[in-house]
Length: 322
Image (cartoon, rainbow, N blue to C red; front, side, top):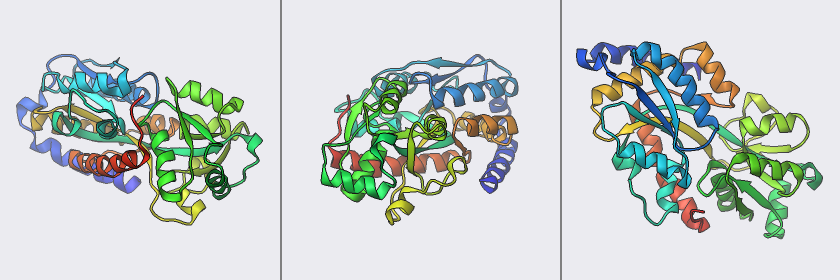
């Protein structure tokens, strides 16, 4: 990751030298970062960015929540905003999965938004209530295959990284888990800890303290590599003896389509510089995130890749929006 951050910083410094004078004078008024959900990782990352962007851009950068409809309210708001770089969006997987979950949307994420930069990714942790006495993911999968109606898991809704983590595990192993949508992570986590739910595909920052306190048992992480925060917990691939399972939540900054490329580059440059700020990295990692950065092209490639592969997972699962 240090190598990736060094590359991001080099790209940022190279990019700043190529910007025209008017782009370097951007912005001319307050910049808003729209968070299309309630308090969570996106809000934490957005506020940390806003605090650091304000002095370097020379204008106030504020965070505004516009939750609802599986993040579609906030997504649509930014998609229809003036394409001048003063209204930005921070979001993740719902941007590329909602097209498969909803029968119709008032915007098209790949057409109406332009990726600026990836901020962070957050792995999920496959957890169980300790009362199940399940010791490994392989054991849980076998139990779920033998009794498909036995295990319930809760998430903030269809298309969330937790929901897709479960559906991808079903696709890869044949294990069945019943999805119970909630209004937010807190309610789902409370029901998991109390034993109302048996299984959780829980964001690392939420799972971490509960696992360490013994209130949940961690069986695997859903990324392709282990997290140092739970170093003894294997990946799904390790636990199941497979090599093609990969599901992590990610967050990035986007702007309305037709935002001038110079403005997109200016934002990318400044945020890449912030990616080398130890205090910012501490916030990202403290929230269970893995800092990213890099070019807007890399971010766009990830969005297109996940739209295709996760859209197929959604279609195979038959999942629909709440």
